[in-house]
Image (tube, rainbow, N blue to C red; front, side, top):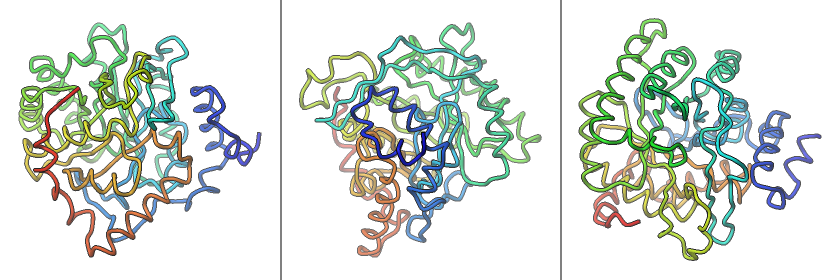
Amino acid sequence: MKATSLTTMPLMSIEAEKAHGLSITALKAGAGRMLGPGAPHQSPRLKATVAGLTFPNPLGMAAGYDKNAEVPDPLLALGFGFVEVGTVTPRPQSGNPQPRIFRLPNERGVINRLGFNNEGHEAALLRLMKRRHRGGLVGVNIGANKDSEDRAADYALGITTFALYASYFTVNISSPNTPGLRDLQSAENLSDLLARVMAARDAAAEDAGRSIPVFLKIAPDLQEADLDHIAAAAEQYGLDGLIVSNTTLSRAPLLNREAGAQAGGLSGKPLFDLSTTVLAKMRQRVGAAMPLIGVGGVHSADSALEKIRAGADLVQLYSVMVYEGPRFPIRLLRQMDAKLKAQGETVRSIRDQSVTEWAERPLVG
């Protein structure tokens, strides 16, 4: 099937996971070049330097879409400033039983309980090796196998495996769909995990010729004390930044609670307020220097800019693409640029303008 037919067919009428697969097929067939600018969108107002990396713009494709590193370059061609592939685990795993992705069109949300379905390190590594010299910022989101006897070892192995090919790493301990995974966010478990992950990063630095930035992706379903110990651990172990946040188990953000009857993590527009509140609270804890990536509920230029005002250096999206399609990233970036130009601002100058306001909100769920 040609890319044009795949990208114009009514994907919303197709079962969600099948539609996802068809969109990957379309990008492989060249849809990225046809529907986007062909490269990351650039503007001096949108440019950002974070963790030693220069981003042409602050908009990234979040992990979860390109789990197996099949289409990072076509995604960059849609205009994204960076792409995060994964979550990838050492061994292939099928994830949870289907169906496991559920659209909430009236809420502009998605519920998923995928469970780290992916083809494993080897398959992703082979693909990333082939694109090594193409440029562009491609992060690798690493996870642990569901049946792993030593999950921290799985994360350390991810660092070792992809060190030559990852622009940065994301340590994903916040998915709600792998039993016990979020327990790694506890103080004791987190200390052991970060010590081993950062040791693996340091050991790989010589071969990689650089120290690869490592980010920790946290859940939105946390209490103030949780944020305290995560911030302290991030500083203690020298993390390069945090990604705030993953999906939520809460259904409180939904206007229609019945829409959230399925088990799994809720993402999309309903997550915006909760994830942005956690983001701002974390910015207050880690200070101005530590990079933060804001993800959760970005659905417009205004919401992307508000994430930055609430403390984010960069923002990521994914669920909104289900409803807005592949032309959305470049449209969003152009609107962001126009708004910043009209205000005489840049993404650097607006960061943290709304931190206090957001951080005063309660953590509800």
